[in-house]
Image (tube, rainbow, N blue to C red):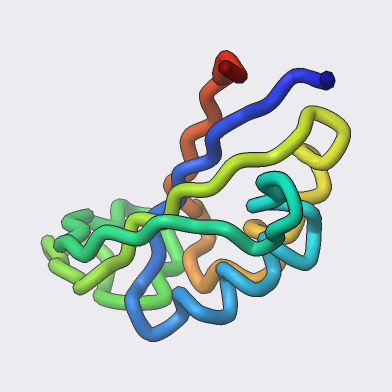
Length: 106
């Protein structure tokens, strides 16, 4: 069995379905005979675009709050780069907040 990773990404709620679909189409969320498996939590993202930023939401120098989804999924090592590329292609932010964790399969 190949190495597996958990991917966590934060996205504005109105873009979440498109991002989940792109991640699944790239190979994320495969668990047994199921594909596109994800878990989502709702929350508030906060950020302040600094000089040189090109924010999708908000404006430079102003603290912003956005209703976001935290999407969690898994993927095999051989699909990891494809999934990360899909996130970058579909995500509306210029700097998607994305975490990747190696996981133990039990």
